[in-house]
Image 1 (spheres, helix red, strand yellow):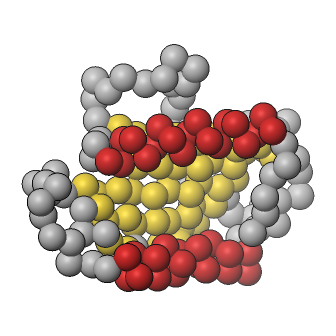
Image 2: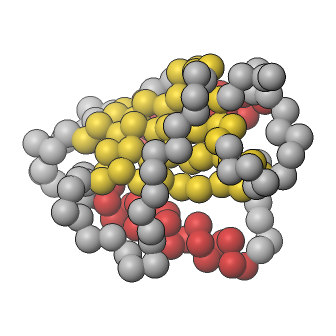
Length: 150
């Protein structure tokens, strides 16, 4: 796992994670997408999509049917698949940057420092579905779409 020492990048991630955690607890997040683009052309080369299906009938008194260990095992399984994706994803040879897209319920207040952007789709992509996992409250399904090699 890579860890950044860049304080500005750490602050950026901390703000996003804090907000996403709040929206997860409120069950108002539908999807989180990480887009990787070539810096020079702005062409999307990878699009990691995590669909989040929330059970809005759950209350604080609802008993979870899934243990913390099962949830952690599910997360570990997805992380292992992401790590193993290096075996089939095309090598990124040009400088790249990333963007994080968060899809929420309509009318939700978004931090003022965040902006709106398009979906950053890839034309005619290859797609690989990753394992999904559930917390009883949230079901997370993951997939990566990537640009075919030229």
